[in-house]
Length: 187
Image (cartoon, rainbow, N blue to C red; front, side, top):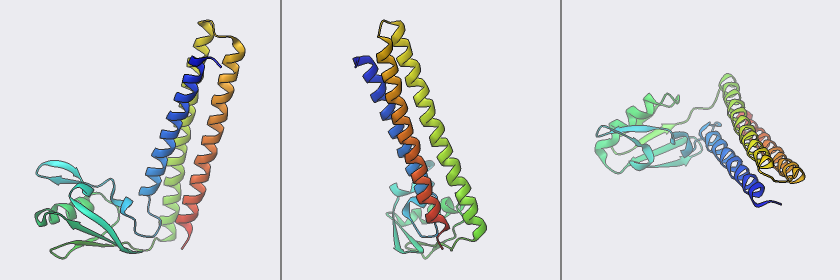
């Protein structure tokens, strides 16, 4: 196989792996009834005028399946952290006891579970679109090589390999969605 064709195949694989990684991180943020530190990954705290990720200001742990415990490294940051969690609109109620913040994660209602499944499916569709866009870009780049003198059979082989990778990645997205949906719908 031509080195340039191989390069575009590897580039497509790398891009698709990143799309799957992004999907996994987004699915981790969708809560499934039990407390997870990933639920607070997107929270930014206004700390001395700069939006700072929560995990840079405090340790976030789960004390049990339904409770998150946030221990700030500076006590002065407590109220700012509490405000940021409320403003993040995650449906969580932080309680501040003066030294740490506890968040009791309420059990999900059936309606909320269905909303989360819809959001999960939307994230999955976004990942599939990203994978398909990477496939299209790789195939276009490989086709351009044919104009530069690469034999047609090598171009077809390259496109075939890109399609195999794409099919594998789409199946991986579907697999991740099935697992997450089951996790959300399990009471």
